[in-house]
Image 1: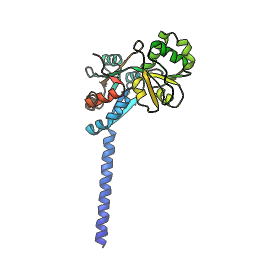
Image 2 (image 1 turned 180 degrees about the vertical axis):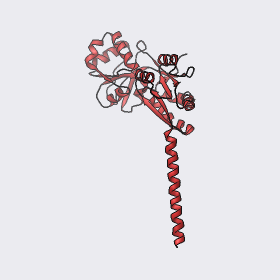
Image 3 (image 1 turned 90 degrees about the horizontal axis):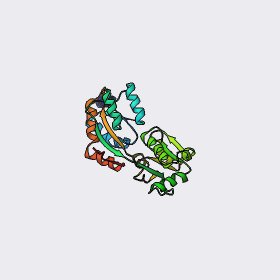
Image 4 (image 1 turned 90 degrees about the vertical axis):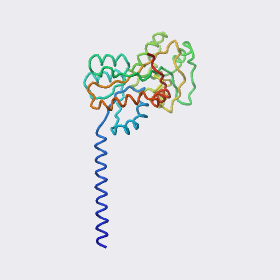
Amino acid sequence: MWTQISNATTAAATAAILAALTLAQGVAAEAVETRVFTSAAPRGVLREMAPVFERMTGHRLVIESAFSTDLKRRIEAGDPFDVAILPPDMADDLMRRNKLVAGSRVDLGRTGMGVAVRTGAPQPDIGTVDAFRLALLAAPTVAYADGGASGVQFHGILARLGIAEAMKPKLRPYPSGGAVDALARGEADLVVIGISPILSVPAVTLVGWLPPELQSYIVFTGSIGAAAKQPADAQTLLNLLTSPAAIALFKSQGFEPAPH
């Protein structure tokens, strides 16, 4: 009887030790991170591809999202990262200054700008330039991404439409990714922003793309950091982001191939 209890206790202890070792190995594996800097638009695709990347490499993918201008400043300041997803002009500038690996840049796609309302709210006519202008003037509040590329483009559109001054009291600026969430919470009546963030929030509805005469596109590229701690993993991530599965995901989130 004692032998049976002793054997059972030993077996239980052995199992506990093995479990602890396995957990420790898992924690050690998780400690190896591949860090990617990205703006809000490609974030959804990265999140979808993260489990695939982690199975392939055994390393954890850390996604840090901010406006491209903020990410560029962080890279210039020496913040650690492995992959940066940025507009091509920023990526090329950082390559010239040896902050990104020369020749590592891949084009991931481009996305245009659109208008959204809360799900269930009336959808304004934005099919023509005049209709879009009237829709903006009729909206009590309009959210946009302050500091991002789409925000800069939106202000340029307001100036082209001749309504920049009239719109000032209506505008609600938000940080990266926050404008669509604000719309979903009822803090604004419209949002004008890149298509991809709109499609990632279920509580809002895409009214449509901006009229062609006003449309502008934001191109996103991926590059490897010159001081990347995990350069092989960084290349694996770029390969994944240009794979057929990722291309389909980008398309589902409002991206189209970038022109060459």
